[in-house]
Image (cartoon, rainbow, N blue to C red; front, side, top):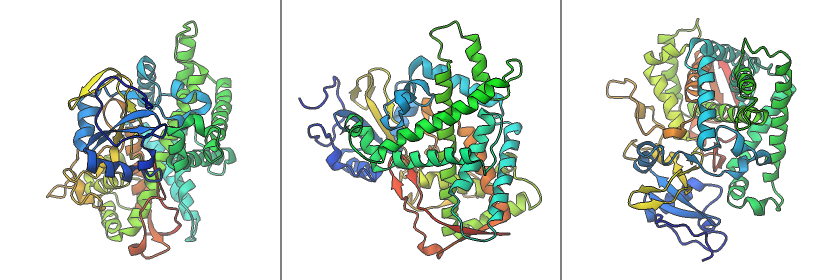
Length: 473
């Protein structure tokens, strides 16, 4: 048979053709829409072939929950994602794309280190507050002229990661720092585009074809060089008895395990783990902020209610704190709704089953790749009313108190839930409230004609490019 044989009983799905699989039935510029149309025909669990390889698609809240939560361990493997392979090492050495014991050890180390350096604590909150004030000042410097907020936001968000990884922040005018952010942004757009989708399906073929996908790897080489340069500077002042940041903690682990040839703590893993944190911690949060500002300009009545709540709870004379969130249900609901509505990572990162798995009457052999469509959870009509409409009331009860919805999964769910979830939640609340406490966002066109359709929708969703002005409140 021309397609890759797999033992077991996979869910039914559209008929594939030689070599191409189901590519002829997929819009590579809008994979989510294609997967939705196939769900209407084959149900919430079905199989598609990306090239010769079968992938089981999970569509909707119930299917995703049954797999990633109720069978969390079975579905905890990380599938292939070729477009994120710098020098063929990214999957093998970084946290996000490793598997088995290596993944467990690196994830445990990263989580404990992030907690030690303030994730969920007052110390990291103060770093975010400091960065939010710097971002606010940069916005004010525009003096009511038009500007694109993209790199204003990414510099601020990335500096929070820098403070944890490198123990320092970079000045916004630092050319090397700005170049790093441009590389991250460029790669996110390529990976989310048709080029990235084609590369993930046909990596061998695409290596020989011209196109933007080749830029991903030159970008990653430059990102790697940035991390290595900062690592060399770090080693000169490294003191094992006084760790300053995640990089120092990793170097300490390397020293302790230097005689263990099987150790996962080495320079290559340190560089790739740092890149994982940079990419995951910079682009997703800054893109959510960028999309959120556009949404708030389209719905000024929502913005006005957030302004009122900020004035009532925080006032104008002190910095917002994470503690304020529990007293600000509407603002909290707006931030949750921004994340639900935009679904920045709509298809999650690919999963695979780590053992032979029975699921809904099917038999998935070990290694079967799985695509949990997170955006389908966020638009499940059984969990959200009018799911394709922006409505903060999705997260409010009848008494206007904040109400959590277990179909809220912007950080995924189960064993592979984003390890930076706590940090991202702190950043989104403090950055949004600091800006809205002090500024009004002014669009260049009437709110009614603002188009929220993403400019790119693939592995990630990229908001349309826009300019705005900000005026003091």
